[in-house]
Structure formats: structure tokens, C-alpha cells
Image 1 (cartoon, rainbow, N blue to C red):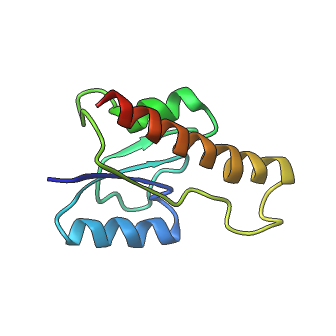
Image 2: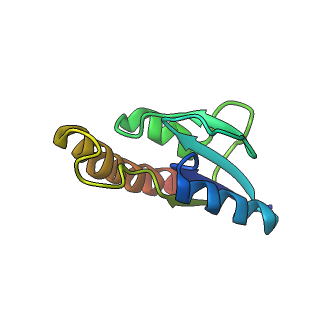
Length: 110
């Protein structure tokens, strides 16, 4: 079974993607800074602005899942002004960079 990590799986778009993936038979793991309102899959609280946490999440966390087959990156602050500029930059840019770099590094270890 294909294991998919959804970053931002607790958000509005993330919840829809998690539901769709589960409905199509994928094994889904939600990694987000915010816990889901109604969990439908395993959830791990991650600060994606921390590269170490991001790498661990994409290369497998503890015994729940040993590796990841795909990543759907949706974690973001959705609108300007919803948070301070520095927080928006850290979340939307730094976190995205960390997800891409960690996914590339995790793929090399397989």
C-alpha cells in the first residue's frame, strides 16, 4: 500500500485531500503543527520550520511507519495578514524548503 504524508493535513484543503486519499485506499499520515479536529488517520505534530523534525517525519517516525512513498505539501498560512510577516515567511517559505530538501534526502536513503 502506498503511504502518503500530507503536510497541513489538519487545514481546510488538507482535510479534503486526506479524505480523498483514504477513500482511494492510500495509507495516510497527517503531519501538521495543529491537531486535526476529527482525526481520520495517524497524526504527528511537527514544526516544519525545523529541518531535523521534517527529515524525521519524511524518513519515518518511530514504529508507526518506516518510510514514506509520497508527500503532498499543503502546510501554509493561507493569506497575507493572517499572521505576522516573519511567521508567514517562516511557515510558507522555510517550511516548504525544508519539506523539499528533506524529501530529497529521505529518498536518497532508501
